[in-house]
Amino acid sequence: MIPMEYPLARFQEELGEGRARCRACSRFCTIRDGGFGICWNYANIGGKIFHVGYGLLSSIESRPIEIKPFFHYWPGSSALTFSNWGCNFYCPWCQNHRISFSRPPADSGVRHSPEDLVEMAKAFGDEGLCASFNEPATQVDFLLDVFSLGKKEGLYSTVVTNGYFSHASLEALIESGCDGFSIDIKGCPKSHTKILKGVDPNVVLSNAKHAIELNAHVEMVFLIVPGFNDDDDCIRWIVEKHVSMLGEDVPLHINRYYPAHRYASPPTPLEKLLFAKKIAQEAGVKFVYIGNVGLPEFESTYCPTCGKLLIARSGYEVTAYNLDKENRCPRCNTRIPLRGCNIKKDKRWRILL
Image 1 (cartoon, one colour):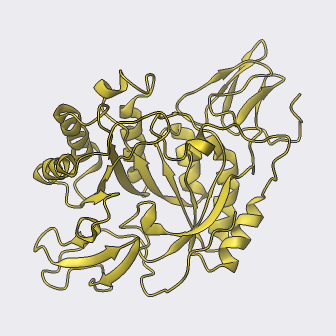
Image 2 (cartoon, one colour; image 1 turned 90 degrees about the horizontal axis):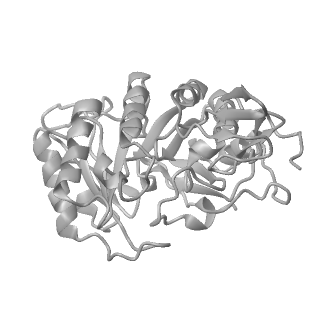
Image 3 (cartoon, rainbow, N blue to C red; image 1 turned 60 degrees about the horizontal axis):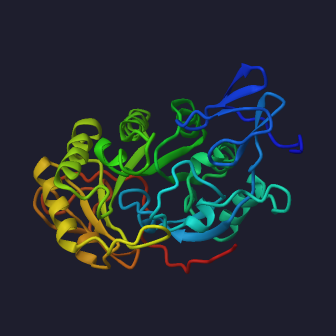
C-alpha cells in the first residue's frame, strides 16, 4: 500500500477505470491502479499518479561544472549535484547502474526537502544546482520545487540528462530556472533497433532544439559505444542532425565508453573518437571535445576562427582563461558562446552523501 502523503504528479492524464498516464517524460507510461511507471518513481494510487520517489536521493556532492560535462556554462563554478534512483532507459553499459537500476527506497529512505539542497549549496559556496548521475526525468516534480527555490536564492540550475522529458515538463523546468542541459544522444535510429528499443533519438534532438528555442543553454554528449553506435553511418547521422537541428555553436562532447554493468566490449579506440571529431568539424561544428581520455588538448576550447587557445582545462579544472569580458577572442575578436563565468574561484569539492 502506497502512503497518500506523496505529492500528486504535475504531469499526468487520467484515463478512467483506474488507469492514468504519466507525462513527466516521453515514455508516457500508462499505469494501472497500484502500479508503477518504468522509472519506479511515479505510481498510480486510486487512478491518479503520485511522485513516490519525491526527495529520495542516492547522492549529494559539490562538483565542478566541467565534470558534467559543461564547458560553455558557468566555467570555473561548482554545483551541488544530486541524484535519486531509477531511470527510464536502462542502458546495459550504464556507469551508474547501481542507482539507475534500483528502485527508490520508498518505505525506508530519508527524504530531503528542496530547502535542504538549497541551504547545502549556499553553505558550501556552490554557484548552482545540478541533477545528475541517474536520469533527472525520474524526479521532475522534485526538481521543479528545488530549482524554483534555487532561482529565488540566486543559484543556477542544470541537468545532465538523456533528454527524454515531455515537452510540458521541459518547459516547466526552464520556467523554474533550469537553463543548462547536458544532453546525451545515445545513438541513431538504426542503433536503437538493436538496443534501447522504443527510445527515439529524434525525440532527444527535438527536446534539445526546443530548449534552445526557450533560451536554455545546451551541450550535447555522444558516448561512442562499440557495437552499438560506432559505425560510420550512425556517427554521420548524429553529426548531421546536430548541425541541422541545433546549430554549429552548440558544443559536442564525443566521449569514450568503458566496459560497465552488462556490456563488456573493450573501450572505444581513440582513433574512432578522432574520426568522429573530424566528421563533426568538417560538418561545421565549432566546438568539438573528446572526453574520458584524460588529454587536456582535447578538452580545451580554441577559437573557431583563428585557433587561439582560449580556455585550457585539465582534470575538470580551468587552468587558463583568455577571453575578455564580452567572451571574445583577444586575437581576432570572435565571440565565444558562454553562459555565466566563475573562473577565479578556488575551492575543494566535497562529497556530502
